[in-house]
Length: 81
Image (cartoon, rainbow, N blue to C red; front, top):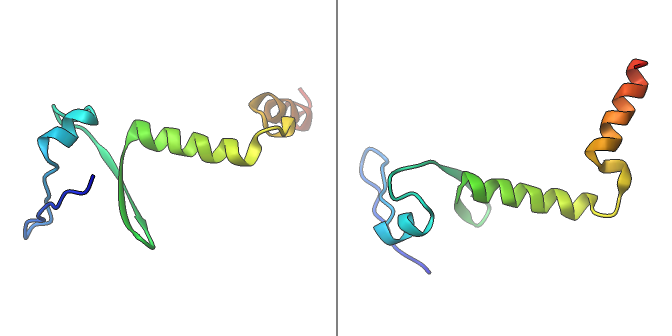
């Protein structure tokens, strides 16, 4: 879905109500703005977390040494606990 929005002279823009409602922003909320080579991406905080988790999984899946438990074990070993 592509929707044109207007940016006011002071830099504000309004998302259409139907998009805000779908994103759970009907009563207000926060969006994270990511600038890319292709343009701007707006994501909710939950979407950003899911995106980061997907990226992490892509690079760590199947590698037990990258787990939180492995990290904590290494830190305990390094600190002598």
